[in-house]
Length: 509
Image (cartoon, rainbow, N blue to C red; front, side, top):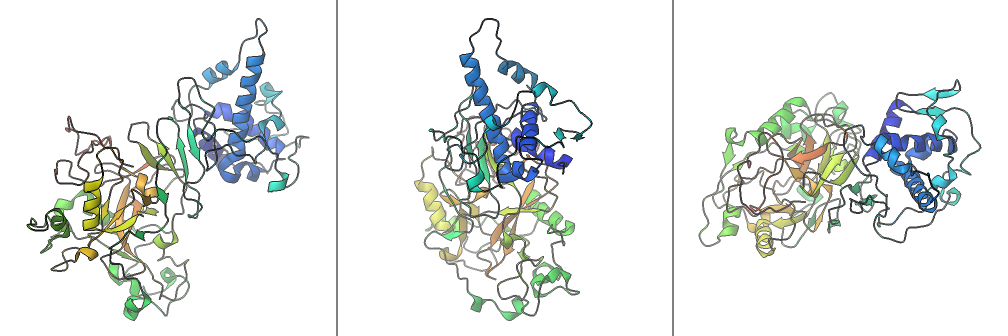
């Protein structure tokens, strides 16, 4: 069966993400389709690994042939092909990159391009009667002798020599070697999250990937079934709570109505209110601590008055004592990441960033911010001890419910720091005001509002390969802020830091 237009387009996007132009990958895609006897699943497997490896094998073979061929009048054709394919679909001039596996070495287990015929390339784009066509490529319906031997398993794969280097080896003269990691999550997430440096200028980030928050040292985090009251859960429910005629007890937090649609998106009214809380904080009601943990951490003897905290809107998901199962529509965040993501080196000089590899609808859950759970005092001490040349991620203060108590103990004033241990959210870059992600506090396994999950949802429809951004809510002119030494490069027309001059730059992520 011929691939759909969407499947072909996805293959081109995967190649373009590594700087490979459509016209360069197209003939490789056609030949692989023949070699696999029209089995498109083999091409899609492992995020198009065989397609990418075959392309770079072909580039290596061509390069070696050109070096050996010194006959007069013989003109190298690789440069011509590069000139003809100088522009990709999105107009970016990205260099082809050698793909490595998760440990930085070339993947050894896929079919080599030397097993695929390229001798009749000029006829590949002709459309005979027995060919199936799409808008993007033409794939032959005729069987070929270039069949891949055996099923898609480890023993049947054609082996090729493993690269000796731990980094990429295929580069242009004016580019540094690219870096590619198949999965930075160490297989701890439902989906692989790749990392690619198309520019070749970034050092690989040094951190430990964790899918759930971990306690650093002194944070007070009491999670137990006994602390969840029966009236705070729906023990009598079963299956999907969203399909029930009446919302269960878990919807009390949001006015007796669930905030999720059956498709897993945030409802429009709730999402709009959450976005307004972030974009117009001056119009929102605030609460003030009698003894603010932030001010107390700065000066324990004579702390200043609390600057105020915006009252946040919580989502309350079904919990462990609820009768529904994990596929319940009110268990979105706790099921984890379900969209295809990639960490990449930003061309604007912002360091690493995160982008989606697929279209995300408005109100989609993307990921939560995962890191070490610290007390506010521990975070302040950590920032004071770190040198100004170190890279940082943005620390999150879990202050959505501060001010509801007269005095908040130090061990209850919690923060998240993903500098040393964190998930993909540590790479989110800041964008003032019109970021495409909004953070919303979510209760999952405890009713204690001192601790909650900080989940990110899309504020609008986000296109494939678009960078994901988040408004940190930082006051760039607050001299007391723990990461004040950072010059905003968000590019937003609403940037709050456009007049910043002569300040030291600190790259986040």
